[in-house]
Image (cartoon, rainbow, N blue to C red):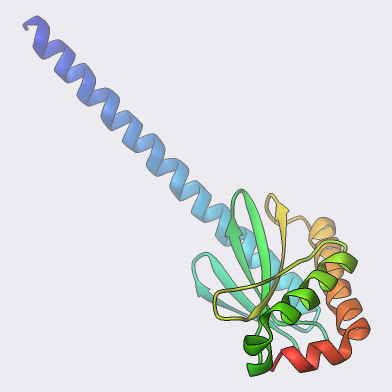
Length: 164
């Protein structure tokens, strides 16, 4: 065997080994995500939410309670809880005033951030690290819902004026 053939074979073996390792890690990550989503779903169904998977990394959860409906999706080594409210025509016409309302929301929110998306919808979201942990998820969800209730109560007129 000549010298170049040895290095070509070695390079091919290293490449194949790398591909197998990456494939294993990706599959393991998908399994962990599915396992997390199953646990999130069980937790939320216990709280009277109805949850459906929109795709393999995004679950939509709705409730008949006063708490907001939201999407739960894997993002940046954790999960993002996100809800959107459609901006009214008044919000589109009075963008500066709508932005002032959103700023007021952010000043009293504890964990949730509020912003206006490109369609003039109000987005509210909270991100948390890692996977499913019963106690941690319960705390994050409680704070997300508490922020929403606090804002909807304090800024009731603005909420109904700027949002459909």
